[in-house]
Amino acid sequence: MKKEKRIKRDEKILRKFIEVYCRENHLKKGVEEYKDGLCKECYDLLQYSLNKLYNCPLDPKPQCKHCKVHCYAPSKRKKIKEVMKYSGIWFIKHGRLDWVFHYFF
View 1 (spheres, helix red, strand yellow):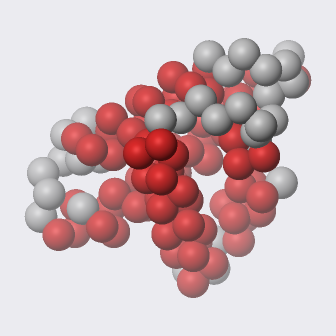
View 2 (cartoon, helix red, strand yellow):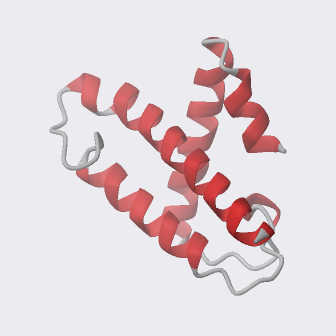
């Protein structure tokens, strides 16, 4: 039960961080929306991340940034780091420390 709760929380954070990144870097610049309010690139990144999240072989599942086994492909790992960094700074600048708190703890 605790593992499921953690995964749901991680999914919520992933969705929110990718949503902010996409809106600010793609949709506002004219990239066409694909699904769920995201462009194709960000939607694919979200699906890839959720697949990795739900199929993590480790128990208990650590936060991905603290994991010893990196299951993300190098290009996806680089992109998700970029997304998390950008969105984390965006949330801080916009007074949404609650989302940053969730990410770090």
